Amino acid sequence: MTLTALHREISACTLCAARFAATATAHAPRPVVWFDAGARLLIAGQAPGARVHASGLPFDDASGDRLRDWTGLSRDQFYDRARVAIVPLAFCFPGYDAKGADLPPPTICAATWRARVLARLPEVRLTLLVGAAAMGWHLGAGPVATQVAAWREQAARGIYPLPHPSWRNTGWLKRNPWFQTDLIPELRGAVARVMAK
Image (cartoon, rainbow, N blue to C red; front, side, top):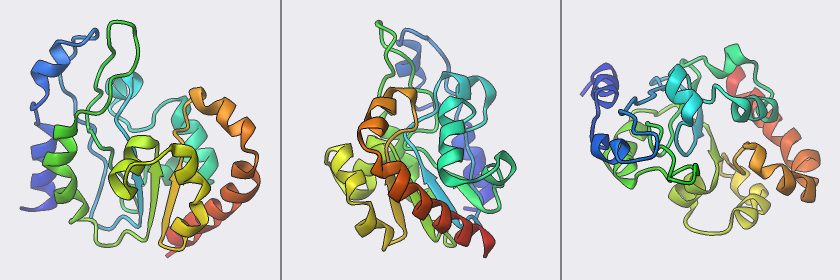
């Protein structure tokens, strides 16, 4: 299957239609597909939020602004599909529960698509694991704080585990100043090198 055909197939996916219709948001699937074969940087996220569901642009929210700041990428660079692939564990917004909390990414999405997509990204040299779900998929289960604290070991393999850039993690970031002083400069350097190639 060509990459274009895979894009089309994912974009037309309705595997979770009944699941999404049963959520508090009662929305239809809208896969947000953002990758190309030549990408060198892989941003492995969790799932689109409500704003991304509306816009169709990954990380088109405050979390995306924070992530772009962490990486040192401009919006134009971040959305350059020729160099950056944004592949979440679920391509669609999972919806909210009755209390308004984010639902987790449906596992059927990653099980159906992830290996097929990653196999078509042969040029990836650097992977950012954004959030607990992405870390769990790529590194195995473990507390986010522990996974991120081991960033130097993972960076040697071309992987940076990152907390989700949501406002909900602002407290964690304040309690762990090494993230900003130690990890972020190294991350920006690694991103700049891979984007320059």
